[in-house]
Length: 240
Ligand code: 13P
Picture: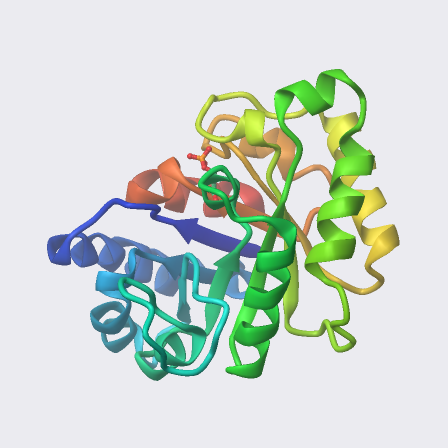
């Protein structure tokens, strides 16, 4: 199971200390040895975090990257090879918080290709809005995001899909188990052998229900991942 912490635009150097608790927990609880834990902090923390977590079980990832893996005159941007250079192994691409800032499926496709070229593993986010859910066009929307986002990518072995309904992010709402199982099945049906994670308001209270949805391969966790106690609780309950 994957447990991916997306810190979004939160955290300074002192936040790195909060991971000590998680490292201690992993040492103590052997049942978590199957857990794959990845922290995706803001770019400013990738290098010190990767140094800190070297020779531990936790990997580091970024939250986005530029579409070009080469250097270039792109003020304020960071590309996939630069992320790799400072110790990132993963990158989140297509998060709805970036889609809402104008990132479209075509650009996401270029970013995914560039990340793969640089040797990063990609956590590719897809999800419908509340309006789309109400119109019952969820599968159609996901299909479009997947077919354009993954266009002309033959080797998908370094891609993990994260299903994050936009209406579930930061709201405390999660899809009901039956709907979620069906949607994850739909995504897996279109992408044979890919891991599919769920993200959106995952917390220590709803994890018992979410972990019982057997086709989910892990969780992408926002708010709760910044609090080591909550993050540990989520992992612990998953294996209980
Ligand atoms: P929350 O867990 O805060 O709802 O965020 C989910 C998310 O966007 C993870 O990428």
